[in-house]
Amino acid sequence: MALFQPALPKYRIPIFNRLGAAEDINLTLFPSPRISGSSLPEATGAESFDVIYASMKRLGPFFRQPGQHTELTPGRFDVAVFSWNVRNIDLSRALRKARRLGVRTILWGHGFSKNEARWRKWLRDRQARRADALLFYNHNARSQLIEQGFDQKRLFVAANTLDQQPIQQARASWLDRPDELREFQEQHDLLDRPAIIFVSRLEPDNRVDWLIEAFARTVDRVPTGRLVLVGDGSQRDELQSLATRVGIADRTTFTGAIYDEMQLAPWMLSVSAFCYATNIGLSLLHAFGYGLPAVTSDATERQNPEIEALQPEENGLTWRHGELDDLAAQLARLMLDADLRDRLGAAGHTLAVEHYTIDRMVGGYLDCIRFAAGL
Image (cartoon, rainbow, N blue to C red):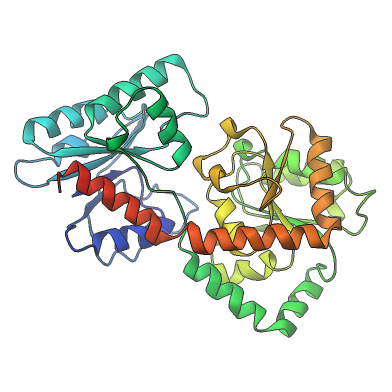
Protein backbone atom coordinates (compact mmCIF):
# COMPACT_ATOMS: atom_id res chain seq x y z
CA MET A 1 0.00 0.00 0.00
CA ALA A 2 1.28 3.48 -0.94
CA LEU A 3 -0.02 6.49 0.95
CA PHE A 4 0.83 9.93 -0.45
CA GLN A 5 0.65 12.92 1.90
CA PRO A 6 1.65 16.59 1.71
CA ALA A 7 3.33 16.23 5.12
CA LEU A 8 3.90 13.87 8.04
CA PRO A 9 2.55 15.63 11.14
CA LYS A 10 3.40 14.24 14.53
CA TYR A 11 -0.20 13.48 15.48
CA ARG A 12 -0.53 11.09 12.50
CA ILE A 13 2.37 8.82 13.53
CA PRO A 14 0.37 6.63 15.97
CA ILE A 15 -2.39 6.18 13.37
CA PHE A 16 0.00 5.15 10.61
CA ASN A 17 1.85 2.83 13.01
CA ARG A 18 -1.42 1.11 13.90
CA LEU A 19 -2.41 0.90 10.24
CA GLY A 20 0.96 -0.48 9.17
CA ALA A 21 0.82 -3.09 11.91
CA ALA A 22 -2.37 -4.66 10.51
CA GLU A 23 -1.83 -8.25 9.44
CA ASP A 24 -2.42 -7.81 5.71
CA ILE A 25 -0.96 -4.30 5.28
CA ASN A 26 2.54 -3.43 4.07
CA LEU A 27 2.54 0.37 4.21
CA THR A 28 4.88 2.83 2.53
CA LEU A 29 4.23 6.48 3.28
CA PHE A 30 5.27 9.18 0.79
CA PRO A 31 5.18 12.55 2.58
CA SER A 32 6.80 15.79 1.52
CA PRO A 33 9.92 16.62 3.57
CA ARG A 34 9.48 18.98 6.49
CA ILE A 35 9.29 22.57 5.29
CA SER A 36 12.42 24.53 6.14
CA GLY A 37 11.78 27.04 8.90
CA SER A 38 8.52 25.41 10.03
CA SER A 39 7.72 25.91 13.70
CA LEU A 40 6.16 22.46 13.96
CA PRO A 41 8.28 19.75 15.60
CA GLU A 42 9.87 17.11 13.40
CA ALA A 43 7.69 14.01 13.24
CA THR A 44 9.56 10.85 14.20
CA GLY A 45 8.63 7.41 15.43
CA ALA A 46 7.71 5.38 12.33
CA GLU A 47 7.74 1.79 13.60
CA SER A 48 5.49 -0.24 11.31
CA PHE A 49 5.65 1.64 8.02
CA ASP A 50 8.36 2.76 5.62
CA VAL A 51 8.91 6.42 4.76
CA ILE A 52 10.10 7.63 1.37
CA TYR A 53 10.04 11.40 0.97
CA ALA A 54 8.34 12.78 -2.14
CA SER A 55 9.01 16.48 -2.57
CA MET A 56 6.11 18.86 -2.97
CA LYS A 57 6.27 22.20 -4.77
CA ARG A 58 3.87 25.08 -4.29
CA LEU A 59 2.58 26.85 -7.40
CA GLY A 60 0.52 29.70 -6.04
CA PRO A 61 -2.62 28.14 -4.54
CA PHE A 62 -1.80 24.76 -6.15
CA PHE A 63 0.82 22.14 -5.38
CA ARG A 64 2.72 19.44 -7.26
CA GLN A 65 3.97 16.17 -5.87
CA PRO A 66 5.25 14.20 -8.90
CA GLY A 67 6.02 11.17 -6.74
CA GLN A 68 2.30 10.41 -6.79
CA HIS A 69 2.77 8.97 -10.27
CA THR A 70 6.54 8.40 -10.59
CA GLU A 71 6.58 6.09 -7.55
CA LEU A 72 3.84 3.92 -9.07
CA THR A 73 5.75 1.23 -10.95
CA PRO A 74 4.56 -2.16 -12.21
CA GLY A 75 4.00 -4.75 -9.48
CA ARG A 76 5.06 -2.46 -6.63
CA PHE A 77 1.72 -1.61 -4.97
CA ASP A 78 -1.77 -3.08 -4.80
CA VAL A 79 -3.47 0.04 -3.39
CA ALA A 80 -2.57 3.74 -3.48
CA VAL A 81 -4.12 6.41 -1.27
CA PHE A 82 -3.98 10.03 -2.43
CA SER A 83 -4.89 13.33 -0.79
CA TRP A 84 -8.27 14.33 -2.18
CA ASN A 85 -7.54 17.97 -2.92
CA VAL A 86 -8.54 19.87 -6.06
CA ARG A 87 -5.32 21.91 -5.77
CA ASN A 88 -3.30 18.71 -6.22
CA ILE A 89 -2.10 19.12 -9.83
CA ASP A 90 -0.63 15.62 -10.12
CA LEU A 91 -3.69 13.78 -8.83
CA SER A 92 -5.48 13.18 -12.15
CA ARG A 93 -2.31 11.87 -13.77
CA ALA A 94 -1.66 9.57 -10.80
CA LEU A 95 -5.19 8.16 -10.96
CA ARG A 96 -4.83 7.43 -14.67
CA LYS A 97 -1.47 5.72 -14.21
CA ALA A 98 -2.73 3.66 -11.30
CA ARG A 99 -5.61 2.41 -13.43
CA ARG A 100 -3.23 1.39 -16.24
CA LEU A 101 -1.07 -0.54 -13.76
CA GLY A 102 -4.01 -2.22 -12.03
CA VAL A 103 -3.38 -0.36 -8.76
CA ARG A 104 -6.59 0.24 -6.81
CA THR A 105 -7.09 3.84 -5.67
CA ILE A 106 -8.50 5.63 -2.66
CA LEU A 107 -9.05 9.37 -2.27
CA TRP A 108 -8.79 10.53 1.36
CA GLY A 109 -10.00 13.96 2.33
CA HIS A 110 -12.69 16.29 3.59
CA GLY A 111 -14.99 15.84 0.61
CA PHE A 112 -15.92 19.53 0.75
CA SER A 113 -14.35 22.98 0.79
CA LYS A 114 -14.86 25.77 3.31
CA ASN A 115 -14.58 28.14 0.35
CA GLU A 116 -16.76 26.14 -2.01
CA ALA A 117 -17.00 27.16 -5.64
CA ARG A 118 -18.70 25.50 -8.60
CA TRP A 119 -15.38 24.62 -10.27
CA ARG A 120 -14.01 23.08 -7.07
CA LYS A 121 -17.03 20.85 -6.57
CA TRP A 122 -17.10 19.82 -10.24
CA LEU A 123 -13.42 18.85 -10.20
CA ARG A 124 -13.64 17.12 -6.80
CA ASP A 125 -16.63 15.04 -7.95
CA ARG A 126 -14.86 14.20 -11.22
CA GLN A 127 -11.84 12.96 -9.30
CA ALA A 128 -14.13 10.98 -6.98
CA ARG A 129 -15.67 9.07 -9.87
CA ARG A 130 -12.22 7.96 -11.05
CA ALA A 131 -11.24 6.40 -7.72
CA ASP A 132 -12.19 2.94 -6.49
CA ALA A 133 -13.11 4.17 -3.00
CA LEU A 134 -13.46 7.41 -1.06
CA LEU A 135 -12.42 7.90 2.56
CA PHE A 136 -13.90 10.81 4.54
CA TYR A 137 -12.94 12.56 7.76
CA ASN A 138 -16.55 12.60 8.98
CA HIS A 139 -19.97 11.07 8.34
CA ASN A 140 -21.68 14.23 7.19
CA ALA A 141 -19.48 14.55 4.09
CA ARG A 142 -20.18 10.92 3.21
CA SER A 143 -23.92 11.47 3.55
CA GLN A 144 -23.80 14.43 1.20
CA LEU A 145 -22.25 12.35 -1.58
CA ILE A 146 -24.77 9.58 -1.06
CA GLU A 147 -27.49 12.19 -1.56
CA GLN A 148 -25.77 13.14 -4.83
CA GLY A 149 -26.11 9.59 -6.05
CA PHE A 150 -22.67 8.13 -5.31
CA ASP A 151 -22.60 4.41 -4.52
CA GLN A 152 -22.51 4.20 -0.73
CA LYS A 153 -20.69 0.85 -0.89
CA ARG A 154 -17.47 2.62 -1.90
CA LEU A 155 -17.75 5.50 0.57
CA PHE A 156 -16.04 5.06 3.96
CA VAL A 157 -15.34 7.13 7.07
CA ALA A 158 -12.22 7.18 9.22
CA ALA A 159 -13.26 9.84 11.74
CA ASN A 160 -10.23 12.04 12.27
CA THR A 161 -8.82 11.88 15.78
CA LEU A 162 -5.82 12.23 18.06
CA ASP A 163 -3.91 9.70 20.08
CA GLN A 164 -5.39 10.30 23.53
CA GLN A 165 -2.73 8.28 25.36
CA PRO A 166 -0.21 11.13 25.91
CA ILE A 167 -3.05 13.51 26.76
CA GLN A 168 -4.52 11.17 29.36
CA GLN A 169 -1.10 10.39 30.82
CA ALA A 170 -0.27 14.08 31.23
CA ARG A 171 -3.72 14.80 32.66
CA ALA A 172 -3.47 12.00 35.20
CA SER A 173 0.09 12.93 36.16
CA TRP A 174 -0.87 16.49 37.09
CA LEU A 175 -4.14 15.53 38.79
CA ASP A 176 -2.16 13.09 40.94
CA ARG A 177 0.00 16.01 42.11
CA PRO A 178 -2.58 18.53 43.34
CA ASP A 179 -0.07 20.55 45.36
CA GLU A 180 2.14 21.11 42.31
CA LEU A 181 -0.90 21.98 40.17
CA ARG A 182 -2.04 24.48 42.78
CA GLU A 183 1.44 26.00 42.84
CA PHE A 184 1.33 26.33 39.06
CA GLN A 185 -2.04 28.06 39.28
CA GLU A 186 -0.80 30.47 41.93
CA GLN A 187 2.28 31.26 39.84
CA HIS A 188 0.16 32.12 36.78
CA ASP A 189 -2.68 33.86 38.62
CA LEU A 190 -5.19 31.14 37.74
CA LEU A 191 -5.98 29.82 41.21
CA ASP A 192 -9.74 29.88 41.85
CA ARG A 193 -10.23 32.18 38.88
CA PRO A 194 -12.47 31.43 35.88
CA ALA A 195 -10.49 31.34 32.66
CA ILE A 196 -10.77 30.64 28.95
CA ILE A 197 -7.98 29.01 26.92
CA PHE A 198 -7.11 28.91 23.22
CA VAL A 199 -4.44 26.52 21.92
CA SER A 200 -3.31 26.78 18.30
CA ARG A 201 -1.53 29.01 15.80
CA LEU A 202 -2.04 32.76 16.12
CA GLU A 203 -3.02 33.17 12.48
CA PRO A 204 -5.80 35.16 10.76
CA ASP A 205 -7.97 32.15 9.87
CA ASN A 206 -8.40 31.29 13.55
CA ARG A 207 -9.85 34.73 14.42
CA VAL A 208 -8.21 35.00 17.80
CA ASP A 209 -9.04 38.71 17.55
CA TRP A 210 -12.72 37.82 17.89
CA LEU A 211 -11.95 35.85 21.05
CA ILE A 212 -10.03 38.75 22.55
CA GLU A 213 -12.77 41.26 21.73
CA ALA A 214 -15.50 38.97 23.06
CA PHE A 215 -13.57 38.20 26.24
CA ALA A 216 -13.21 41.94 26.86
CA ARG A 217 -17.02 42.15 26.88
CA THR A 218 -17.21 39.63 29.74
CA VAL A 219 -15.25 41.76 32.20
CA ASP A 220 -18.28 43.38 33.83
CA ARG A 221 -19.97 40.01 34.38
CA VAL A 222 -16.81 38.07 35.25
CA PRO A 223 -14.40 40.60 36.83
CA THR A 224 -11.93 37.90 37.93
CA GLY A 225 -11.79 36.14 34.57
CA ARG A 226 -8.57 35.45 32.69
CA LEU A 227 -7.70 34.59 29.09
CA VAL A 228 -4.85 32.23 28.16
CA LEU A 229 -3.57 32.11 24.58
CA VAL A 230 -1.21 29.21 23.88
CA GLY A 231 0.58 29.36 20.56
CA ASP A 232 2.62 31.53 18.26
CA GLY A 233 2.20 32.88 14.77
CA SER A 234 2.21 35.88 12.48
CA GLN A 235 -0.44 37.74 14.49
CA ARG A 236 1.11 37.55 17.94
CA ASP A 237 2.28 41.18 18.13
CA GLU A 238 -0.97 42.42 16.63
CA LEU A 239 -3.05 40.39 19.10
CA GLN A 240 -1.02 41.61 22.07
CA SER A 241 -1.67 45.17 20.93
CA LEU A 242 -5.37 44.40 20.58
CA ALA A 243 -5.52 43.04 24.14
CA THR A 244 -4.03 46.32 25.32
CA ARG A 245 -6.47 48.44 23.27
CA VAL A 246 -9.55 46.64 24.60
CA GLY A 247 -8.29 46.84 28.17
CA ILE A 248 -7.54 43.20 29.02
CA ALA A 249 -3.75 43.05 28.72
CA ASP A 250 -3.47 42.61 32.49
CA ARG A 251 -5.73 39.55 32.42
CA THR A 252 -4.41 37.93 29.22
CA THR A 253 -1.47 35.53 29.13
CA PHE A 254 0.42 34.79 25.91
CA THR A 255 2.43 31.65 26.65
CA GLY A 256 4.00 31.14 23.23
CA ALA A 257 3.99 27.74 21.54
CA ILE A 258 3.88 24.66 23.79
CA TYR A 259 4.21 21.28 22.06
CA ASP A 260 5.10 19.05 24.99
CA GLU A 261 1.91 17.55 26.43
CA MET A 262 3.23 17.45 29.99
CA GLN A 263 3.98 21.18 29.83
CA LEU A 264 0.62 22.00 28.29
CA ALA A 265 -1.44 19.91 30.72
CA PRO A 266 -1.35 22.27 33.74
CA TRP A 267 -2.66 25.12 31.58
CA MET A 268 -5.53 22.97 30.32
CA LEU A 269 -6.32 21.79 33.85
CA SER A 270 -6.38 25.32 35.26
CA VAL A 271 -9.09 26.87 33.08
CA SER A 272 -12.87 26.72 32.76
CA ALA A 273 -13.31 26.16 29.02
CA PHE A 274 -11.67 26.05 25.62
CA CYS A 275 -12.57 28.52 22.86
CA TYR A 276 -11.72 28.41 19.18
CA ALA A 277 -13.88 31.17 17.71
CA THR A 278 -14.02 29.59 14.26
CA ASN A 279 -12.06 27.18 12.03
CA ILE A 280 -11.91 24.55 14.78
CA GLY A 281 -10.47 21.12 13.99
CA LEU A 282 -8.61 18.48 15.98
CA SER A 283 -8.15 21.03 18.76
CA LEU A 284 -11.72 20.19 19.71
CA LEU A 285 -10.80 16.62 20.59
CA HIS A 286 -7.65 17.84 22.33
CA ALA A 287 -9.78 20.00 24.63
CA PHE A 288 -12.27 17.20 25.20
CA GLY A 289 -9.38 14.95 26.22
CA TYR A 290 -8.78 17.27 29.17
CA GLY A 291 -12.45 17.36 30.09
CA LEU A 292 -12.93 20.93 28.87
CA PRO A 293 -16.15 22.14 27.28
CA ALA A 294 -15.55 23.90 23.97
CA VAL A 295 -17.00 27.05 22.41
CA THR A 296 -16.98 27.74 18.69
CA SER A 297 -19.06 29.30 15.91
CA ASP A 298 -22.37 27.82 14.77
CA ALA A 299 -21.31 28.38 11.13
CA THR A 300 -20.33 24.74 10.58
CA GLU A 301 -19.45 25.40 6.95
CA ARG A 302 -16.51 27.47 8.22
CA GLN A 303 -15.25 24.65 10.43
CA ASN A 304 -13.09 21.60 9.82
CA PRO A 305 -14.57 18.06 9.72
CA GLU A 306 -13.96 17.43 13.42
CA ILE A 307 -16.81 19.85 14.22
CA GLU A 308 -19.04 16.78 13.92
CA ALA A 309 -17.92 15.82 17.44
CA LEU A 310 -19.36 19.01 18.97
CA GLN A 311 -22.88 18.56 20.31
CA PRO A 312 -24.20 21.97 21.43
CA GLU A 313 -25.43 22.04 25.01
CA GLU A 314 -24.16 18.47 25.47
CA ASN A 315 -20.36 18.78 25.34
CA GLY A 316 -19.90 22.40 24.32
CA LEU A 317 -21.55 25.60 23.20
CA THR A 318 -21.85 27.49 19.94
CA TRP A 319 -22.19 31.20 19.36
CA ARG A 320 -24.10 32.96 16.59
CA HIS A 321 -21.45 33.62 13.97
CA GLY A 322 -20.72 37.31 13.56
CA GLU A 323 -22.29 38.33 16.88
CA LEU A 324 -19.44 38.89 19.32
CA ASP A 325 -21.86 39.77 22.09
CA ASP A 326 -23.22 36.24 21.84
CA LEU A 327 -19.71 34.80 21.95
CA ALA A 328 -19.11 36.86 25.08
CA ALA A 329 -22.34 35.53 26.58
CA GLN A 330 -21.34 31.90 25.98
CA LEU A 331 -17.90 32.47 27.50
CA ALA A 332 -19.50 34.10 30.55
CA ARG A 333 -21.94 31.19 30.94
CA LEU A 334 -19.08 28.73 31.25
CA MET A 335 -16.96 30.88 33.53
CA LEU A 336 -19.88 31.48 35.91
CA ASP A 337 -21.73 28.13 35.89
CA ALA A 338 -19.63 25.35 37.38
CA ASP A 339 -22.37 22.75 37.02
CA LEU A 340 -22.76 23.52 33.31
CA ARG A 341 -19.06 23.30 32.52
CA ASP A 342 -18.64 20.12 34.58
CA ARG A 343 -21.52 18.44 32.74
CA LEU A 344 -20.34 19.51 29.30
CA GLY A 345 -16.71 18.72 30.07
CA ALA A 346 -17.50 15.21 31.32
CA ALA A 347 -19.49 14.43 28.17
CA GLY A 348 -16.70 15.71 25.95
CA HIS A 349 -14.13 13.63 27.78
CA THR A 350 -16.20 10.47 27.39
CA LEU A 351 -16.64 11.13 23.68
CA ALA A 352 -12.92 11.68 23.14
CA VAL A 353 -11.64 8.64 25.02
CA GLU A 354 -14.39 6.13 24.18
CA HIS A 355 -15.67 7.03 20.73
CA TYR A 356 -13.10 9.10 18.80
CA THR A 357 -10.39 6.50 19.23
CA ILE A 358 -7.46 5.50 17.04
CA ASP A 359 -8.88 1.96 16.85
CA ARG A 360 -12.08 3.29 15.28
CA MET A 361 -10.24 5.54 12.86
CA VAL A 362 -7.90 2.76 11.75
CA GLY A 363 -10.85 0.37 11.51
CA GLY A 364 -12.56 2.68 9.03
CA TYR A 365 -9.34 2.98 7.09
CA LEU A 366 -8.89 -0.81 6.90
CA ASP A 367 -12.48 -1.34 5.76
CA CYS A 368 -11.85 1.10 2.89
CA ILE A 369 -8.51 -0.47 1.91
CA ARG A 370 -9.87 -3.99 1.88
CA PHE A 371 -12.87 -2.95 -0.19
CA ALA A 372 -10.64 -1.18 -2.72
CA ALA A 373 -8.35 -4.21 -2.89
CA GLY A 374 -11.30 -6.56 -3.39
CA LEU A 375 -10.62 -8.49 -0.19
